Amino acid sequence: MSTIKFYSVKSRKSVEVDVSKVTKVMLKNGRPAAQAIDPATGVKMFKILSAADAALLS
Image 1 (cartoon, rainbow, N blue to C red):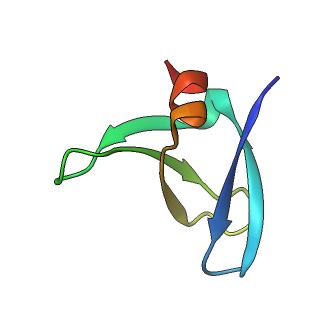
Image 2: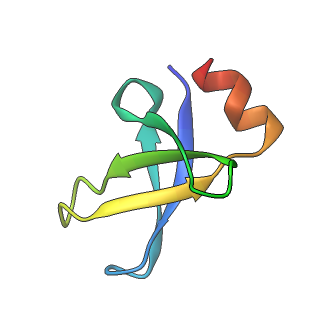
Image 3: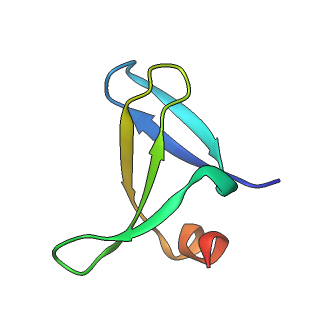
């Protein structure tokens, strides 16, 4: 399965999250973003989506 790489601010490292656990959201300024939960710390993470990552979630 495919994964999307997030950066966890709390644990200060990159985290790969499975696409099935990622939610696509729209930010206030109209940009598409991805939202996921860090499996190690339980903290919510956000990432502004690139065109390649947006294609994975569509």
